[in-house]
Length: 318
Length: 322
Image (cartoon, rainbow over all chains, first blue to last red; front, side, top):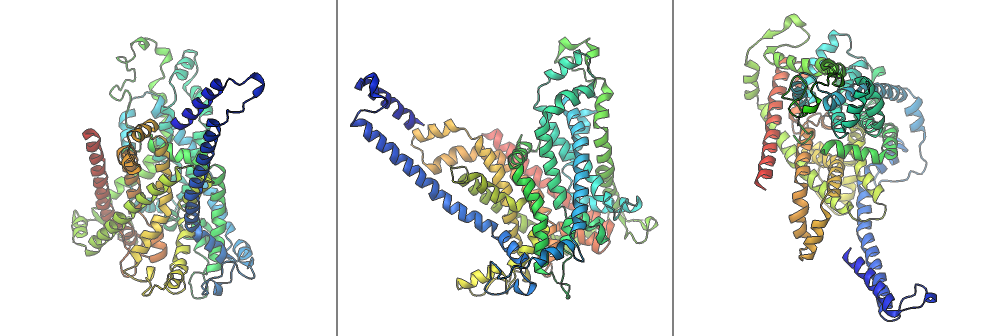
């Protein structure tokens, strides 16, 4: 920074002292000017070198980090017997695309778990957005008796590990005939404390003045919420939608406990159903299914990367 | 907790008028929302949380005083007082699981933090393809645990897995047996955990580094402070709240790790990877000892809660001290 301004100033001074005429253009004085330009060029070169000196090792590290995914893709295109061949062959001679057709349309088609996962995730996202937005708004912007105590109860609830609740939920769902239905995954996911917190944090950051002005104009509370605050919240809403989608898509524990029939399985459960005659995991099919399960989440992430990252950090730290 | 801002405006003012703070609004009743409106807004969420979180929680507390195996139906619930809790404290598997959980989280959490911070410091520079680089390190975090677990299980196969093949090429002998050995299963689990969680720590640290005070670095440089000195004097203190936040969230998350254990090791070999959360699952859904499982869960929860409280107090103490 300092260097840059210094350079700037000396160039300008040089210009003035040289007294170049109107036709001379921006050309600098010989002598001092060339030294300056050289030094600048050197610095630029050094910065570029340093950029790559850090960049190359980090790129290598990143590729190492992603190596398991490369292995996953490679294995998904091999017959099972070749998965563990030594030395490993990264690019199979004859890529076995049949693994993918088998996984998609074969006996244990991944399409049914895929559909179940989409169904669960979409309903969870819709429910979560509705209830968390309404409640988060009220906790942030409305005054009502009992707000403080209810909010503190919420805070305490948020610390409960999910595993602690598995047993009683299991008992309830059994009693309510929700056991082994997708609703056992959807319903608890529609009303979360965490989503309410995230939305509350967002609405607190919004000014009160809009509401006060609208109230004086006779708008109802719901109109203030739906017409003034909600339209501005789209980026936060999509962030919450993405987070909820990711949680729902990757959840393994809840379906493991609450689902028993394979046709109800969601994707993470479905991935475990590809076995060989001995009941061991079949590498080729399992990896093909894994690749298919990762694609949607990767697309969602790459498309909304900025928003997702912002949501992760803002919601967490403010 | 650092998770949310816990200030509650007007919490001490149940009428909701907050007259003292806003005297000019007194008497403007039509512009004030009616008190029940707020309840209408929170009702859907509150009812859901009551039904699916709060009532189950109370049931856990009640169940922890009973003996019950589900198969016998509700009639088979037997009140046993504190027996479950006494049994928990006498249960060698419980203590062993506790030690394993402490070892697991105690190693994985700090290492995840260090890796995440180092990556964040490196990725905070001007780099070719920086956006893609940042995304690359985050991807393991968003991929589902089953795909990750199956992949690592095969990569770490003692005989034919890629990792041991590479180690063999470098002439390593006595190759680690990873998930097949009771000595190596926990380190292998820690390795995969760090790999999958570092991207999260990295992301949170990166965003905290954006807020680091640029003028302070300038001043430090003018004063002749080196990189390490300015890291210690400026960067590290400004990252302290972030570090505490990450410690808490990573600790809560990692101490509850379940999917990977259930999927890869099933708690073994032996009981070398039976953490408390996996033990809870075993007692309830493999042994169907619901009452006892509830007691194990409650004791665990109280323990985790106490650790978080301590971390929070330590941070507050530091903050006041500075």
